[in-house]
Length: 255
Ligand SMILES: NC(=O)c1ccc[n+]([C@@H]2O[C@H](COP(=O)([O-])OP(=O)(O)OC[C@H]3O[C@@H](n4cnc5c(N)ncnc54)[C@H](O)[C@@H]3O)[C@@H](O)[C@H]2O)c1
Image (cartoon, helix red, strand yellow):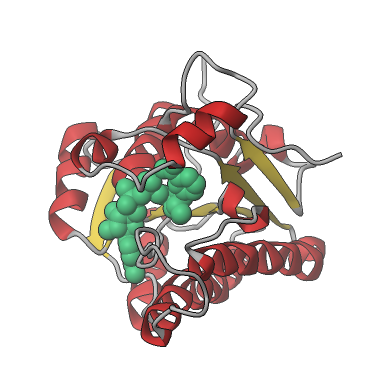
């Protein structure tokens, strides 16, 4: 049976804990993939691991740099002749582990988080939308966060940047929907992956998530996010746009 993304040309911007899972799932669903991340070794490792010669390419990417984003979009079009989707998944989490609030926040940390998460997502949208319109339409998916509408006492830069991503997503959906572009965001709760085994999370985050989740048996896994992302990038998701969809075991809910 054909996969959800059979021969769709998709860029994944940002690998790592969740991103590696996105790449694997999209490949399994039949996508033709271009993968990018700041970490060049990570990119080549994932490409080798998925091992689909002729169907997947990787390139070092700085998603906050316009030339770098333009280059990955060009690579997709030059390699596969079109662009059908992009999942923008990277994040700068520079204030995630800082104990302070806005009063203590070093402004250079705020600027850097916004530069990557808010401005970087703008750059990705700016360069992928025209290529997708030229291809007859397409789908953009952002990995945002439950933190976009949380009220936490720390990581205010990260929270603000994730809220900015949602505003951008809605703008794209409204403005470019008539040209065949869909845009949606996934708001994960705690998605457990290999990095958390290496670097523990700040005090209280894990316990808080466990306490607030409605599903108690486990935390999220990268494939929980990837399963939804594949749907949103696929033709089965063709009537879904301008949505923020939570994948968080009931950590948050909105009427
Ligand atoms: N894991 C969770 O519990 C969780 C929860 C909510 C939201 N998220 C979101 O999910 C996404 C993935 O997070 P993760 O947990 O897998 O973290 P991660 O650190 O494993 O992945 C982030 C990746 O982004 C890359 N990156 C950073 N800056 C970049 C740039 N300028 N250009 C290109 N790549 C860059 C990093 O190299 C890294 O590989 C992020 O957007 C994060 O905010 C994660």
